[in-house]
Length: 357
Image (tube, rainbow, N blue to C red):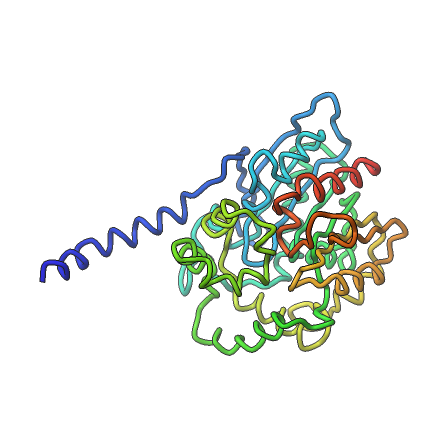
């Protein structure tokens, strides 16, 4: 009976400890955090990491946005070899943003509370990006800014530029950002077949799944992780950082839009009336599109489709693969934090920006 009483007595404390660990895990690279309120009264977190090269201050600041089921932290993975640090050393004033529903801005309710997971991708496009761009301009006095978006972070800027006439962005880098899922891959179908299970959940609990995975052998979650990164190109330490600090719950309305994207060949507005993919023809600013050869979510062919549709005269498409002279075939997120990304991918981003700043 004693072991049972111990388990009962310590259970709540263990749960509390796990909760605190999930909420308090931080990465060494830290900047000044700001709370930014959108027009529809959601609070976003924007973190400022200023230039580390006063002798080479660049013209435009950089706003960076994360992908689906994530937050801003993974751009700081690899610490001094992170994308953020490499941009700072190149003279850029960096602003990392969290979209709504991320935990640094306060807990989002599952069923009740001021805010629940009742938002969709259009809220990111119309409200969150507008608030973030406006805030960075106010803080820096810059007429325009550079923007880097990874995965969904790139999707929402493609949509804002092409469908809403955004004019405050000077240059745009989209890292592994699909506007369709054609050709389909096995992970597209796997996630699509799992859609029915969402009816039982108030939200897709990615944060809890990440915490759980961080305490079990990698073999149990490796098949799912491979959809998001190339395991052999990602260090074990970075994987742990991602699981503990970089994941975020996904709203059901977000998933609904991606399901619609799977069924209809492209990303649409939540009401289905605007084809963000078709409106890529309206994008006219310089665009750099990066793809990973081993990306199982944004196949290079999908990113190439974006390149063909974008209306910009100044546009660049690049695949990071062994065949193209890089040390490995990059996956979806190791374009950000792969073992050699700081030597191969980040310099390409800096070079492209420098020519336009």
